[in-house]
Image (tube, rainbow, N blue to C red; front, side, top):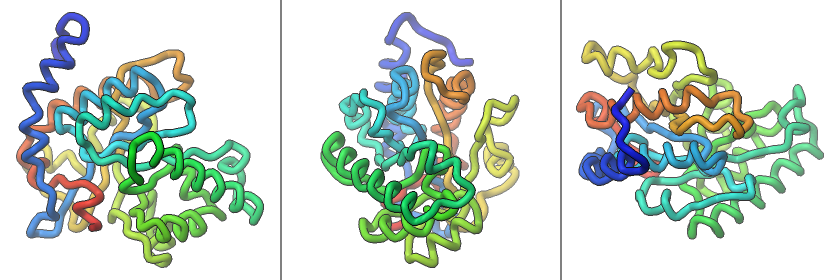
Length: 261
C-alpha cells in the first residue's frame, strides 16, 4: 500500500506531481496495432469511489471514466477538471436485467431509460458521452443488446463488448467496440492485475493485437455504498497509480475517441 499523508494532502500532492504523465499518454493506436484503454467504472456511485476515480484520473492512471447519472448525487466538477474522457455507465432496473431474455416491452423500457440517461449525462457534464457501457453489463442483456447497439449507433457511440458473442452483435449493427475486455468482477485475492496484462507489466510480453479495454474500479471503501465490490477498490487504485508511468503500458494507452474516431 502507498504511504498516506495527513488529510487530503496525499491526494493533492499526487495530483500535482503526476499531471505531466497524463499529458504524455499516447492518443493514437501504436504502429503495431496494439492499444489499451483503461476505463474506471462507477463514477457517481459513492463519494469514496468518486474520490478514488478523480485521483486516478488526475494522475493519468486511467484513460476514461464511466459515469452513473441515476444515483441522485453527482458532483461532476472534480472529474471535469481532470480532463479525462467520460462515457455513460448505463443503469437499468433489476426487473429488466434479471430476465433470461428481455421481451419487446422490456426493450422499450430499456431504450427509454437509455434516452433519459443520455439526456441527463449531457445536462450534467456539458456534452454527450464519448462511449457507452453498462452497470453489471446490463447493456449486453439477452434481448436488449441489439436494441441498445442500434441506439448507440444512432448516437455514434462506441460500446463496451463483454464477450465474443456480444462483440458480434455490436459489429453486426455497425457499432465500434474494443477487441477484448479484461478486468475482475469480484474481490478475489490477487486478481487486481488481469492475467492478460501480467506479461506486459513484467516486460516479458506485449498486448494482444487490436484494442484491449481494461475495466477497473478505483476508489476508497464505503461500507454504506451497498456494493459487493468495495474493499478491492483501493487495491485497484493502488495498482493503477503504481503502473501509470510504466513505459510498457504508457506507450500503448489511448481513449475511445482516439481508438474509434
